[in-house]
Length: 220
Image 1 (cartoon, helix red, strand yellow):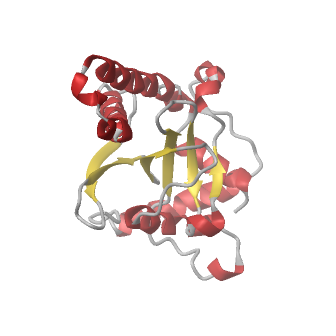
Image 2 (tube, one colour; image 1 turned 135 degrees about the vertical axis):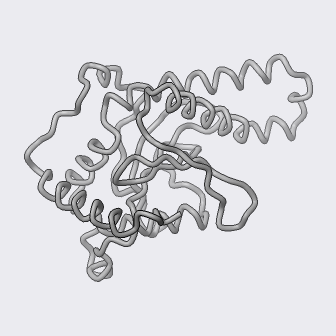
């Protein structure tokens, strides 16, 4: 599947009308954390400054859940344990895919290695047209998207599809920076081009069949 087809899949799973809510949610989260740090002496210590990213992550999770519960993001969510049970992460269920959130130092960076992310990225194998994956185009789980955003400073926000082997394949596709696309709110539905749509329709049908066969197990 070429990049154009992956783009159409991402557009169909998380269209422009939904993406339009993301920049404001992220800015609110980052702003709340900044205000907290400015008014809380305890957070002046070096360890708190270094750990600021954790609080930003929690604030972003909170804002996304608020959007979902307000009906602005018509998706489901659940908390999933890491492979090593040291905590939980927020997983959004979009319909024919899932999505998690990752803070990155730069927009081109790939998320740090983690078992849960690598396991879910394996479900992106059907997007690859490489010889070593020719026997892995069978649907084994829902494709996984990642909403990435700036680390200490909010300078970018993108939705992307990570390759099964992040170090080797990197990003298979990423949207433009959502913070710089104010025109996303112009239309309620993304325009669908003819090129690449057939592959997307085929993939979505295969995913629907997979979901019907695994309605009690969505590859948690």
